[in-house]
Image (cartoon, rainbow, N blue to C red; front, side):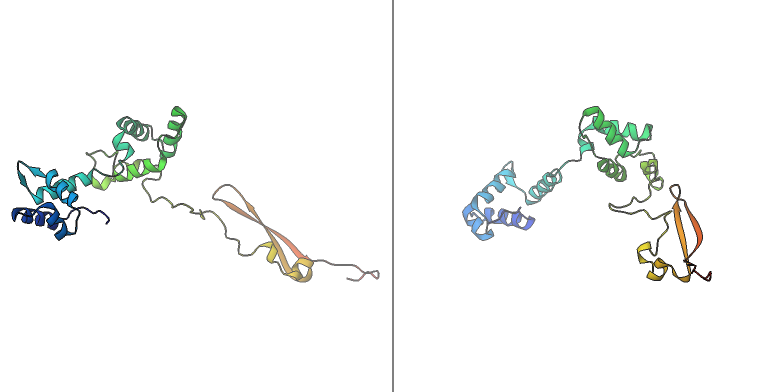
Length: 213
């Protein structure tokens, strides 16, 4: 039998059955629970001789809220202050902060993804800033614009090549017809491109012995 937490209805049933004089084994059979689970639930939330289903349920939710993995920057306040100082005061990017801390400590202390999540979560926000200011997200170099997902390919500033040289017709490749032209593409600096067209007809002329073409 897999264990699952008591619901508020089960806790109220436990109180009713105990009031009626039933023991833990009898209650366990009615609720399809193990007797030790009923006994532990009763003793754990018994305060000054009385059992309150609502208080037991509230205690359960309170304990559950403290479960799970804690966020690194919320646990390590020194690390949080260091990251905040480098990010806000020195305008370092999360990638630069991760690299700097790795050099200082000789190992990865915090990943830049964790820093980004903390920024977008508002961990470093100043309470004096309005909601419309988007907090310290505006401190990011991309001004809080949506970041690209993993595997994104940048196409800005690139010219789409519709046909490659391998798709050139055989007639043009052998220069057996008139009207085909070659065009070379020269890529310049990032974001810029230059087309250099060579007006070279892909047609070869041969001269026979009589001097005619």
